[in-house]
Length: 152
Image (cartoon, rainbow, N blue to C red; front, side, top):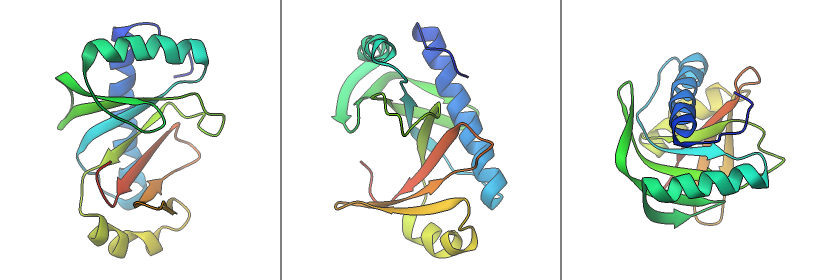
């Protein structure tokens, strides 16, 4: 998935792609996956970002802002067993060439203790002043996934 998203249908397809690929990513790294309710699509240019923001505004009510606007969707997006209720559009960032990411829903402390030290090549601890998170990453995947210590 490398082309700019132009409309609502392409955005929904991208959301489905990210949820599917991040689940495959977790399965590959630790052998299991987790529920997804919040997902972020990365924009790759200012024009694409502006198009995506307009589409996003029509899909739900504003929830918060963190590297781009986030909405609570009027109509959740179903992807397999996952029910995506929150969608964010990330501002263009040269450090984020991936298609997007999501937050997995699971007990952060239990996950950290069980998996972080076992998979140092594919799981990274990221500390922020207000919270910390564990990032799933693999060079053959164009998505990222996170488990966050608090819901943001």
